[in-house]
Image (cartoon, rainbow, N blue to C red):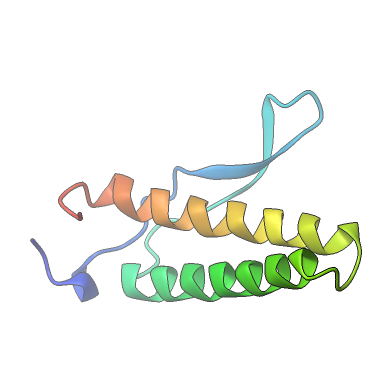
Length: 90
């Protein structure tokens, strides 16, 4: 396996379905160092988890769950894109 500092995003993963569901509004940029991209994905997932905990505890309103949903979608797209470019990763 390559050193993670040598790996990068592929730039082929898109997310945020809109309109009829066939279109995606955003995509991951290519050639972002994998360690930087994965750190950002981790931060997004942590924020999403905190928001979902708040929602589960009855704090806030429906918008909290939607924000967590979108953050989770972004984090998954980053991880998927790094995995596509670097299939040897576990």
